[in-house]
Length: 430
Image 1: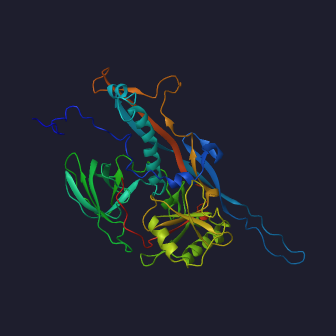
Image 2 (image 1 turned 90 degrees about the vertical axis):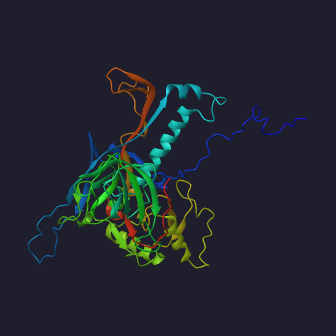
Image 3 (image 1 turned 180 degrees about the horizontal axis):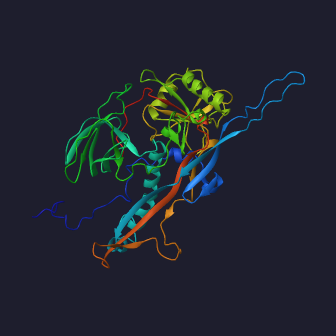
């Protein structure tokens, strides 16, 4: 007698699928959630491609004492400097064949409707990348060269931070100062963190990049960029909260421009964060600007090290003490007046924390993120993909999600950062 078993019954047994897709990627975008988004015209004068505002740079120095019947003081004047902000243009592209769109329109056909899924995920991907940019240096650098390298097509090199490089990224390796190219359009094959926590190498990683062809040898002064992004990204918090740099067309290193410096506390890779250190930086911000920071942002590792310094008897009785804008929980730091919320962000740069006052910091946008449409608003957001032959099209639809915006600080002295403090080795970016 023949026995029916799983092998012989395979032809009519069903596959049972769990749908839709199971999320594997961290979609947190904390810094976007806590900072306001303001129309560019509300921040200053918007002149086409630039936002212009006036920074109060100096006091009226026309004052003094006088004798009975003496001379009056010579008149002075308030000083002002124009800040110029170039709006940046972010985009994410999607592409689907017409057949995929039609054959995934209903649940019985597929686990997800491909068109809806790609459009929704493109919005999340843009938010995630803009969060990276928000913590950036304003020049598009993902990481700086440390050692190694090669002439390709496969290049293995050590960089100072692998935190913002993901497998699958298309990158360029360029001379940081000039933009001269060593190789463009390489695809990241692996990111391996090889540093040690609580040291200067804590974010260091070895990356392998596969280029289309041969490249020139790398050296100190080179950097890794998202392909084509050099100098096209918005200013980020690491640049805004710095000294001796150019921000919004004002060079704080120039004579008389010290007012445009932010506030920096350097732990020199020799100490962990402490409440006293955060208080020092918060008080420096208040002394220089007259404004106290309203919240702090750091990595999970920095926040944990801060929490570990607290004594067991530190308590807050307010039931809402950990509620914060964006739905995130916090710990608190004594910084003068009311306790200051201090929260962690998975995208914050390793070994760094920020003390921020959103009264002088926001996203200035021409409009909210949206899908690119014809200027008459009468066409679809989708268009057919063209081929190399003029007038020949493919049965493939393309669309672009765009956001024209820039992170703007009208008063860098109200912000600050702690750098080179002890932290964990980052996890690989997905």
